[in-house]
Length: 187
Image (cartoon, rainbow, N blue to C red; front, side):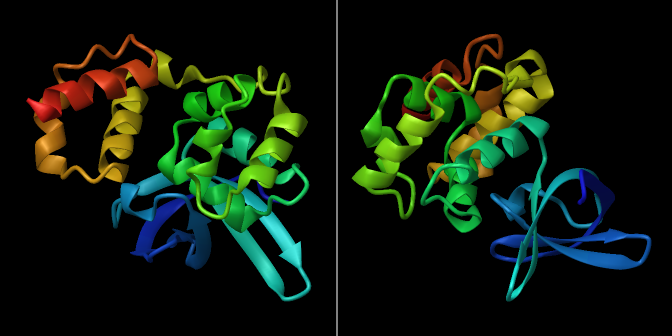
């Protein structure tokens, strides 16, 4: 089993990256492949799924993302391909908050998540996510990156986002940062 792979990005696909480590190119499925840059070196946390029809690697920039992913796939009816989009379109703290507050509508916004699966996620995970250290907001670079990824996910262009990032208070929770950034973008 792999914990992480450190290597250089040699390819970016629609739902995966190619991570070169000592001349071996690993195809790693990730939530947002376009958040990686070609030719840059990354430490990618890995989850390996072994099935009859193949071996698959799922990668995460942050250990907290991997922890949440592992919790999500432990839920009956949620597989890797269903859990990965959670991380591309939702923030870790936002997903955790939705589960704790039993916000079914928030969970249903993710692809392939209906009422039944959303309720199962809440049933299985409510009260069990405290251990996931959402230390993202402690590190300004990671907070800025997460805010940027959320805004890109909402359809904003990078050239619109960059001037706004400097004006958002990174000590706030990510949800509040997104609200402030959206107010600034809509002006």
